[in-house]
Image (cartoon, rainbow, N blue to C red; front, side):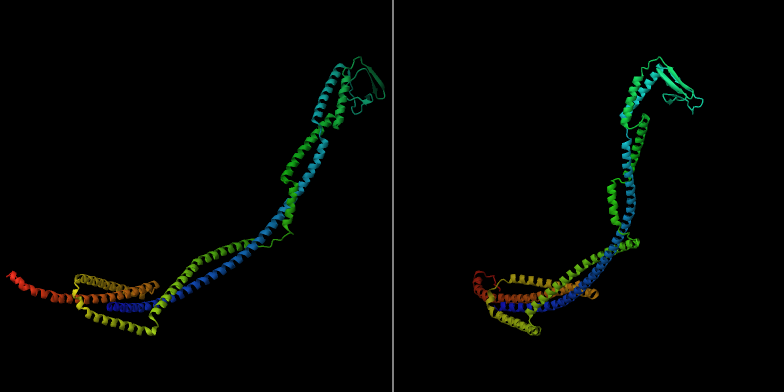
Length: 485
């Protein structure tokens, strides 16, 4: 019971000392956490300020780009109006030409309708003309003829049936004819030949007159002339239609609509007063500036995010150290009472140890029956080995602590400071463990001494009376045997 009380008191004292050591470390860590939090806040605020500046620059660049784009739109509108005016002039001229061409085509088509002669009618006239020529040839070979050669062809003096005889031309006749010879008189000529072709000639001439009357011409030559004029006019119309197709490929009305649309686009003779090259260059520069500003704003976003995460981590670390410090303060109590509380725990531990020693002394007679000394010695060896290992670990941590202290002085780096603090914690824990091992070693050493004493006492108390009683009996049995104890 006393041993358990002593162990409880020693554990309470050790825990309090560990809490004191840990509180010192956590206080330093809390100060560093606050410092890192302030630094993280400063870095985050700087990143936010830089981001705000770049956002403002990007908005200004966007405003300049909008202005430049509006100027470019005005330039495009002016150029479109000027182009529309130029195209309007060209299209208007083409429309005038197309209207004139179409008017000529309509007039030509109307004229062509009056000039056209049926091809079949011409073929019939040609056939009748050939037939009439054949009949005349037949008539001229069967009938007599006369020829008059005037001394003065310009003044014909002879006429037949009221018509002057043609100079130097054969005139076929049949039956009786009368020739009026100037102022000389009348010459009557009688022929005995019968004109068999006269009736056929008269019939053929009648057909020719009917066809000529139907076509509206006076002769075959006139019909051919009209046909030639009709072909010429048709060819002219073909050329005119080709010209109209070239002038207005989609039609005159479509061209007219185009002219109307261009007339609306060209405006009221919009005057071009812009420096086109300056406006285009300004837009190019504005686009380059907005691209650059957007890239700069995009580049600062990872920094803002990184500083934000750093700020969150710093808040978390500060909150963690603050919470641990509050928990330790709850264990340790107020700072002005910690020394007295530590002394009270130490006094309680010493009192428990004294009570344990008194209990040990009172129970020593009862330990005479304890014979497991070998196991205890093995345990003692194990504990001593563990204590030696703890000492070695303390030495290693001490060396590592010295190295880290040197690096801290040289580099003053937060990560090294944290490693140093962790090493301090490990060293404090190792020292606490070593103290516990020392207590266990002392306890086991005292137990070993008690067991040794108990073994000697047991030998004197139990074996010596037995040997004393057995020695005479053994002497009676064996003369040369001596029992030593």
